[in-house]
Amino acid sequence: MGTLSAEDRHFFRSEVNARQGERKQRKPHGHINEAAREIPVHERCDVLVLGGGPSGVAAAIAAARSGAHVVLLERYNHLGGLSTGGLVIWIDRMTDWQGEPVIQGLAAEFMGRLGTGAIAGPPREEWGSRDPDAAAHWGLRTAAFHGVVTNSPTIDPEMLKGVYHQMVREAGVDLILHAWMVAPVVEAGRVQGAVFESKQGRRAILAQVVVDTTGEGDLYAAAGAAFDSDIDAHEIHHCVNTSWLFAGVDVQRWLDFRAHEPEAFSAFMARGRAHVGSFEKPIVSWRDDVATFLGPRKSGFSALDVDDLTQVEWESRRSMAEHLAFYRAHAPGFEKAWLMLMAPQIGTRHGRRLVGVKRVLRSAWDAGAIEPDEIGISPSPSPRFPNISVPYGALVPQKLDGVLAAGKHIACDANSHGFLREIPQCWLTGQAAGAAAALAADSGVLPRDVNVRRLQALLSAQGVPLRQPSVAVTA
Image 1 (spheres, helix red, strand yellow):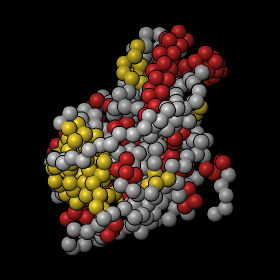
Image 2 (cartoon, rainbow, N blue to C red):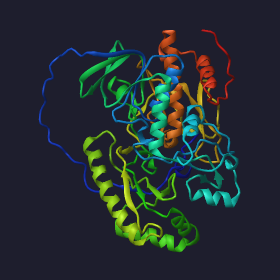
Image 3 (cartoon, one colour):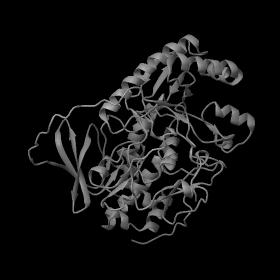
Image 4 (cartoon, rainbow, N blue to C red):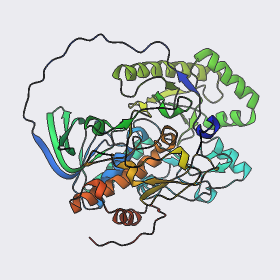
């Protein structure tokens, strides 16, 4: 395929707000030497999962349900990462453009366990509908795109935290919270565990297979695996922001204003940009009195730079206060709004992408070929394209052994990262990585040598739709 036009590459456009001011420059202050020390081994396991976000939770449950002894390490006091603590409560499409569920397995189970009142979205019978009235209704509720109704619900983040914890416990996962991976344990080019820090001090966990679900590939990068860091500046896939929730909102009144007074709505948005600068409109939540703000999306900041992350937190908090004042003064339905919560986790979309055995590439979207090592199916970003095959090779480092990647740092190009970083796709790659890690540990082989047919059969048994025939393979 020749060079793609901007129109052919950019499918995830939104308002992108460039950073203001220069990156903070710190003067060099020399070095210190850290003394050698013995590190206690906290645990030994079959599979160690680093990071309890969407992909990490899925990986841990899938591995444990496959018979592995699993340890899941998470730095916060809850599970779910951006899907809970980051307030990314809009779960983007799990159906294709015909309305068929393609991201299933654990993803469907997570959503199915949310009780009444904790999830809001189109009913099953409307998925794939092209009825103009239905598309207009759900388009205002972030669940219809290109005139097609999709399964893109919004959820209660606290209830989803509970679902994650319950399912991890039921699976028998050894969960360790309030602990942060700081270094890999590597010998002869093979990852054999990780060192973590906590209030208990510096300790290690040794494992047959490690699954890196840190979000930015912290483990595999530190262990020496190659990675890509290029971005597409025209898309939001690289932006950073902290989200927030406003309560006390009459959401229906706001939606009526958007739908029935388009000129007044446009004038409101223009006035907001002039007054606030980086201005964001809300999306609906799981309740009709809570509005969600997933921005403003800030460009020019690094997800790997602590000073940049600090600056984004400050700018997001200032922007939240400015939004609250402006919306209360000028937005129908927001007169009594109040700050319910600012996300305890910053929303980082991109830091690193693995250089893997295979990559998901924009140049392959049009053909829609089914990868022979398919471990999941992703909806494409537009009805112009068929569903996209996600290969097992995108989870496997090109050279480093003993580790698999899952989540938003798998092997892909910048355009494909635009959708592979989404929460349903993180569930998809996490479940595949967990199942593969369990097979590798059980068989005593490297993750790159896992029998793909066995893996596909195991994923199919766990409810994952695949377009390869599921053939029972003996051990």
